[in-house]
Image 1 (cartoon, rainbow, N blue to C red):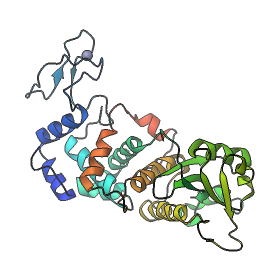
Image 2 (image 1 turned 180 degrees about the vertical axis):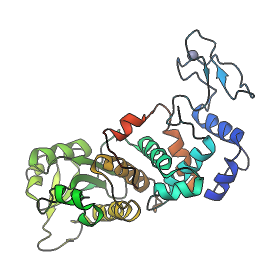
Image 3 (image 1 turned 90 degrees about the horizontal axis):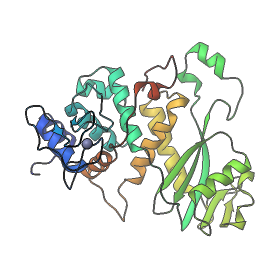
Amino acid sequence: MKNEPKSLQEAILYFSNIDNCIEYLAARRWPTGVICPICGSDRVSSFNAKRRTWKCSKHHSRREFSVKIGTIFEDSPIGLDKWLAAVWMLANCKNGISSYEVARDLNVTQKTAWFMLHRIRLALHENYPGKLGGEVEVDETFIGGKARNMHLDERERRITGTGGKDKTIVFGALERGGKVQAAIINNRKKNVIHAQVKNHVEAGSALYSDAFHSYSGLARYYAHTVIDHAEKYVDGKVHTNGLENFWSLLKRGISGTYVSVEPFHLFRYLDEQVFRYNNRNTKKFTFTDSDRFNFTLSKITGKRLTFAVLTGKVGTTYTC
Ligand SMILES: [Zn+2]
Protein backbone atom coordinates (compact mmCIF):
# COMPACT_ATOMS: atom_id res chain seq x y z
CA MET A 1 0.00 0.00 0.00
CA LYS A 2 1.25 3.47 -0.71
CA ASN A 3 1.69 6.25 1.85
CA GLU A 4 2.01 3.78 4.70
CA PRO A 5 2.95 5.55 7.94
CA LYS A 6 6.54 5.61 9.16
CA SER A 7 6.22 7.82 12.23
CA LEU A 8 3.66 8.37 14.98
CA GLN A 9 2.52 11.60 13.34
CA GLU A 10 2.01 9.88 9.99
CA ALA A 11 0.26 6.98 11.74
CA ILE A 12 -2.24 9.25 13.47
CA LEU A 13 -2.99 11.00 10.18
CA TYR A 14 -3.18 7.80 8.10
CA PHE A 15 -5.37 5.92 10.56
CA SER A 16 -7.75 8.84 11.06
CA ASN A 17 -9.40 7.41 7.93
CA ILE A 18 -11.39 4.30 8.93
CA ASP A 19 -11.05 2.73 5.48
CA ASN A 20 -7.27 2.99 5.73
CA CYS A 21 -7.51 1.22 9.12
CA ILE A 22 -9.58 -1.65 7.72
CA GLU A 23 -7.47 -2.05 4.59
CA TYR A 24 -4.21 -2.00 6.55
CA LEU A 25 -5.40 -4.43 9.20
CA ALA A 26 -7.11 -6.83 6.78
CA ALA A 27 -4.02 -7.01 4.55
CA ARG A 28 -1.90 -8.07 7.51
CA ARG A 29 -4.40 -10.33 9.14
CA TRP A 30 -5.36 -12.15 5.95
CA PRO A 31 -2.39 -11.79 3.57
CA THR A 32 -3.72 -14.51 1.25
CA GLY A 33 -7.39 -13.48 1.36
CA VAL A 34 -10.10 -12.91 3.94
CA ILE A 35 -10.97 -15.90 6.14
CA CYS A 36 -14.07 -16.24 8.35
CA PRO A 37 -12.90 -15.79 11.97
CA ILE A 38 -15.66 -18.11 13.20
CA CYS A 39 -15.23 -21.20 10.98
CA GLY A 40 -12.01 -20.52 9.06
CA SER A 41 -13.65 -20.81 5.64
CA ASP A 42 -12.25 -18.75 2.77
CA ARG A 43 -15.62 -18.74 1.01
CA VAL A 44 -16.39 -15.22 2.03
CA SER A 45 -18.36 -12.48 0.27
CA SER A 46 -16.55 -9.45 -1.08
CA PHE A 47 -16.26 -6.48 1.26
CA ASN A 48 -19.53 -4.63 1.95
CA ALA A 49 -18.24 -1.07 1.85
CA LYS A 50 -21.40 0.36 3.34
CA ARG A 51 -21.47 -1.91 6.41
CA ARG A 52 -17.68 -2.39 6.43
CA THR A 53 -18.09 -6.14 6.89
CA TRP A 54 -17.67 -9.46 5.11
CA LYS A 55 -20.09 -12.40 5.18
CA CYS A 56 -19.22 -16.09 5.42
CA SER A 57 -21.00 -18.41 2.97
CA LYS A 58 -21.14 -21.29 5.48
CA HIS A 59 -24.18 -21.73 7.74
CA HIS A 60 -23.48 -20.67 11.29
CA SER A 61 -24.26 -17.80 13.62
CA ARG A 62 -22.38 -14.49 13.34
CA ARG A 63 -21.74 -15.00 9.63
CA GLU A 64 -21.22 -11.29 9.12
CA PHE A 65 -17.96 -10.03 10.55
CA SER A 66 -15.77 -6.95 10.72
CA VAL A 67 -11.99 -6.86 10.82
CA LYS A 68 -12.20 -6.41 14.61
CA ILE A 69 -13.85 -9.80 15.27
CA GLY A 70 -11.54 -12.31 16.95
CA THR A 71 -8.93 -9.70 17.82
CA ILE A 72 -8.15 -7.74 20.96
CA PHE A 73 -10.29 -4.94 19.46
CA GLU A 74 -13.46 -7.05 19.43
CA ASP A 75 -16.38 -5.66 21.44
CA SER A 76 -14.58 -2.37 21.94
CA PRO A 77 -16.59 0.77 21.24
CA ILE A 78 -13.31 2.59 20.61
CA GLY A 79 -12.64 3.20 16.92
CA LEU A 80 -9.76 1.57 15.08
CA ASP A 81 -8.28 5.03 14.48
CA LYS A 82 -7.58 5.36 18.20
CA TRP A 83 -6.68 1.71 18.67
CA LEU A 84 -4.04 1.70 15.96
CA ALA A 85 -2.52 4.96 17.18
CA ALA A 86 -2.33 3.46 20.69
CA VAL A 87 -0.68 0.29 19.33
CA TRP A 88 1.88 2.44 17.53
CA MET A 89 2.67 4.35 20.72
CA LEU A 90 3.06 1.31 22.94
CA ALA A 91 5.10 -0.65 20.39
CA ASN A 92 7.57 2.18 19.94
CA CYS A 93 7.92 4.31 23.08
CA LYS A 94 11.21 3.20 24.60
CA ASN A 95 10.28 3.63 28.24
CA GLY A 96 6.63 2.74 27.86
CA ILE A 97 3.68 5.07 27.79
CA SER A 98 1.23 5.86 30.55
CA SER A 99 -2.54 5.79 30.23
CA TYR A 100 -2.57 9.50 31.14
CA GLU A 101 -0.47 10.30 28.10
CA VAL A 102 -2.57 8.13 25.78
CA ALA A 103 -5.76 9.66 27.19
CA ARG A 104 -4.50 13.15 26.37
CA ASP A 105 -3.16 12.27 22.92
CA LEU A 106 -6.18 10.27 21.77
CA ASN A 107 -8.90 12.19 23.57
CA VAL A 108 -10.26 9.24 25.55
CA THR A 109 -10.69 8.90 29.32
CA GLN A 110 -7.74 7.70 31.34
CA LYS A 111 -9.66 4.57 32.35
CA THR A 112 -10.33 3.76 28.71
CA ALA A 113 -6.68 4.33 27.84
CA TRP A 114 -5.62 2.06 30.72
CA PHE A 115 -7.85 -0.72 29.40
CA MET A 116 -6.63 -0.26 25.82
CA LEU A 117 -2.98 -0.43 26.86
CA HIS A 118 -3.57 -3.61 28.85
CA ARG A 119 -5.26 -5.26 25.90
CA ILE A 120 -2.31 -4.39 23.72
CA ARG A 121 0.14 -5.68 26.33
CA LEU A 122 -1.71 -8.99 26.32
CA ALA A 123 -1.12 -9.16 22.57
CA LEU A 124 2.59 -8.64 23.17
CA HIS A 125 2.84 -11.68 25.43
CA GLU A 126 5.36 -14.21 24.17
CA ASN A 127 4.99 -17.90 24.83
CA TYR A 128 8.68 -18.45 24.21
CA PRO A 129 8.46 -21.25 21.66
CA GLY A 130 12.17 -22.10 21.89
CA LYS A 131 14.82 -22.16 24.59
CA LEU A 132 17.83 -19.88 24.72
CA GLY A 133 21.27 -21.28 23.91
CA GLY A 134 24.92 -20.41 23.45
CA GLU A 135 26.04 -18.08 26.23
CA VAL A 136 23.16 -17.41 28.60
CA GLU A 137 23.00 -15.17 31.68
CA VAL A 138 20.46 -15.96 34.40
CA ASP A 139 19.45 -13.82 37.34
CA GLU A 140 16.46 -12.75 39.38
CA THR A 141 15.33 -9.38 40.68
CA PHE A 142 12.77 -7.80 43.00
CA ILE A 143 10.22 -5.31 41.74
CA GLY A 144 7.60 -3.09 43.31
CA GLY A 145 6.51 -2.48 46.85
CA LYS A 146 7.97 1.00 47.02
CA ALA A 147 6.52 2.61 50.10
CA ARG A 148 6.62 6.16 48.77
CA ASN A 149 4.17 5.26 46.02
CA MET A 150 1.54 3.82 48.33
CA HIS A 151 -1.28 5.34 50.25
CA LEU A 152 -0.76 5.37 54.00
CA ASP A 153 -3.25 2.61 54.84
CA GLU A 154 -1.82 0.40 52.12
CA ARG A 155 1.68 1.10 53.34
CA GLU A 156 0.74 0.01 56.85
CA ARG A 157 -0.89 -3.13 55.52
CA ARG A 158 1.92 -4.17 53.23
CA ILE A 159 5.19 -2.98 54.67
CA THR A 160 5.65 -5.58 57.32
CA GLY A 161 9.24 -6.51 56.89
CA THR A 162 12.41 -5.80 54.99
CA GLY A 163 14.04 -7.24 51.91
CA GLY A 164 12.01 -9.09 49.36
CA LYS A 165 8.75 -9.27 51.26
CA ASP A 166 5.88 -7.53 49.44
CA LYS A 167 7.93 -7.39 46.29
CA THR A 168 7.43 -9.37 43.14
CA ILE A 169 10.27 -11.65 42.06
CA VAL A 170 11.15 -11.80 38.38
CA PHE A 171 13.42 -14.48 36.90
CA GLY A 172 15.26 -13.68 33.70
CA ALA A 173 17.47 -15.45 31.17
CA LEU A 174 19.37 -13.60 28.44
CA GLU A 175 21.13 -15.12 25.45
CA ARG A 176 24.12 -12.88 24.75
CA GLY A 177 23.54 -11.06 21.48
CA GLY A 178 20.02 -12.45 21.40
CA LYS A 179 16.77 -12.45 23.25
CA VAL A 180 15.59 -12.25 26.82
CA GLN A 181 12.95 -14.45 28.47
CA ALA A 182 11.43 -13.57 31.83
CA ALA A 183 8.84 -14.93 34.24
CA ILE A 184 7.35 -14.01 37.59
CA ILE A 185 8.19 -16.55 40.29
CA ASN A 186 6.77 -17.11 43.76
CA ASN A 187 10.04 -17.62 45.58
CA ARG A 188 13.76 -18.13 44.97
CA LYS A 189 14.05 -21.67 46.30
CA LYS A 190 16.38 -24.03 44.49
CA ASN A 191 13.66 -26.15 42.89
CA VAL A 192 11.93 -23.06 41.51
CA ILE A 193 15.13 -21.52 40.14
CA HIS A 194 16.26 -24.84 38.62
CA ALA A 195 12.88 -25.33 36.95
CA GLN A 196 13.06 -21.83 35.45
CA VAL A 197 16.59 -22.32 34.14
CA LYS A 198 15.66 -25.65 32.56
CA ASN A 199 12.50 -24.14 31.12
CA HIS A 200 14.31 -21.27 29.41
CA VAL A 201 17.84 -22.51 28.67
CA GLU A 202 18.91 -25.34 26.37
CA ALA A 203 20.88 -28.06 28.19
CA GLY A 204 24.60 -27.89 27.43
CA SER A 205 24.66 -24.09 27.08
CA ALA A 206 27.24 -21.89 28.78
CA LEU A 207 25.44 -20.56 31.85
CA TYR A 208 26.46 -17.48 33.84
CA SER A 209 24.94 -16.58 37.20
CA ASP A 210 25.86 -14.93 40.46
CA ALA A 211 26.79 -16.95 43.54
CA PHE A 212 23.25 -17.21 44.92
CA HIS A 213 22.95 -20.72 46.40
CA SER A 214 19.81 -21.67 44.45
CA TYR A 215 21.92 -21.82 41.27
CA SER A 216 24.22 -24.53 42.69
CA GLY A 217 23.87 -27.97 41.18
CA LEU A 218 23.24 -26.74 37.63
CA ALA A 219 26.72 -27.76 36.46
CA ARG A 220 25.29 -31.20 35.78
CA TYR A 221 23.27 -29.79 32.88
CA TYR A 222 25.23 -26.70 31.85
CA ALA A 223 28.75 -25.33 31.55
CA HIS A 224 27.99 -23.22 34.59
CA THR A 225 30.29 -20.45 35.83
CA VAL A 226 29.58 -18.20 38.75
CA ILE A 227 30.57 -14.61 39.49
CA ASP A 228 30.60 -13.81 43.17
CA HIS A 229 29.29 -10.26 43.43
CA ALA A 230 30.79 -9.97 46.90
CA GLU A 231 34.21 -10.04 45.19
CA LYS A 232 33.69 -8.52 41.74
CA TYR A 233 31.11 -8.04 39.00
CA VAL A 234 33.05 -9.04 35.91
CA ASP A 235 35.66 -11.73 35.35
CA GLY A 236 36.28 -11.92 31.62
CA LYS A 237 33.20 -13.53 30.14
CA VAL A 238 31.79 -14.35 33.53
CA HIS A 239 29.22 -11.70 34.40
CA THR A 240 25.48 -11.00 34.27
CA ASN A 241 25.76 -7.45 32.95
CA GLY A 242 23.44 -8.02 29.97
CA LEU A 243 20.64 -9.01 32.29
CA GLU A 244 21.46 -6.19 34.71
CA ASN A 245 20.89 -3.85 31.78
CA PHE A 246 17.50 -5.43 31.11
CA TRP A 247 16.52 -5.13 34.78
CA SER A 248 17.38 -1.44 34.78
CA LEU A 249 15.25 -0.88 31.65
CA LEU A 250 12.40 -2.78 33.28
CA LYS A 251 12.65 -0.83 36.52
CA ARG A 252 13.03 2.50 34.77
CA GLY A 253 9.90 1.77 32.74
CA ILE A 254 7.90 0.69 35.76
CA SER A 255 8.95 3.29 38.29
CA GLY A 256 9.40 6.14 35.81
CA THR A 257 6.47 5.87 33.47
CA TYR A 258 4.09 3.82 35.52
CA VAL A 259 4.59 5.30 39.00
CA SER A 260 2.79 2.43 40.73
CA VAL A 261 1.98 -0.97 39.35
CA GLU A 262 -0.17 -3.37 41.27
CA PRO A 263 1.56 -6.75 41.57
CA PHE A 264 -1.39 -8.42 39.84
CA HIS A 265 -0.72 -6.44 36.66
CA LEU A 266 3.06 -6.61 36.75
CA PHE A 267 3.32 -9.53 34.35
CA ARG A 268 1.78 -7.43 31.60
CA TYR A 269 4.36 -4.69 32.03
CA LEU A 270 6.98 -7.42 32.00
CA ASP A 271 5.58 -8.72 28.69
CA GLU A 272 5.76 -5.21 27.30
CA GLN A 273 9.38 -4.70 28.32
CA VAL A 274 10.43 -8.15 27.04
CA PHE A 275 8.78 -7.37 23.70
CA ARG A 276 10.51 -4.02 23.45
CA TYR A 277 13.89 -5.47 24.41
CA ASN A 278 13.63 -8.38 21.99
CA ASN A 279 12.69 -6.07 19.14
CA ARG A 280 15.26 -3.39 19.84
CA ASN A 281 17.88 -2.36 17.34
CA THR A 282 21.17 -4.23 17.70
CA LYS A 283 24.34 -4.59 15.63
CA LYS A 284 22.76 -7.60 13.96
CA PHE A 285 19.17 -6.45 13.48
CA THR A 286 17.49 -3.14 12.89
CA PHE A 287 13.77 -2.62 13.27
CA THR A 288 11.89 0.47 12.15
CA ASP A 289 8.92 1.82 14.07
CA SER A 290 6.60 0.42 11.43
CA ASP A 291 8.29 -3.02 11.74
CA ARG A 292 7.53 -3.07 15.46
CA PHE A 293 4.00 -1.82 14.81
CA ASN A 294 3.34 -4.49 12.18
CA PHE A 295 4.81 -7.19 14.39
CA THR A 296 2.49 -6.13 17.21
CA LEU A 297 -0.48 -6.17 14.86
CA SER A 298 0.45 -9.69 13.78
CA LYS A 299 -0.03 -10.74 17.40
CA ILE A 300 -3.49 -9.28 17.97
CA THR A 301 -5.56 -11.94 16.27
CA GLY A 302 -6.94 -14.87 18.19
CA LYS A 303 -6.62 -13.03 21.47
CA ARG A 304 -9.45 -11.49 23.42
CA LEU A 305 -9.37 -9.84 26.79
CA THR A 306 -12.54 -9.07 28.66
CA PHE A 307 -12.81 -6.46 31.34
CA ALA A 308 -13.43 -9.07 34.06
CA VAL A 309 -10.37 -11.09 33.12
CA LEU A 310 -8.26 -7.99 32.88
CA THR A 311 -9.05 -6.56 36.29
CA GLY A 312 -9.30 -10.00 37.91
CA LYS A 313 -10.56 -8.68 41.20
CA VAL A 314 -12.78 -6.10 42.79
CA GLY A 315 -11.36 -2.75 43.68
CA THR A 316 -8.72 -2.42 41.00
CA THR A 317 -7.52 1.12 40.61
CA TYR A 318 -6.78 2.28 37.12
CA THR A 319 -3.40 3.82 37.69
CA CYS A 320 -0.48 4.02 35.25
ZN1 LIG B 1 -17.71 -18.99 8.65
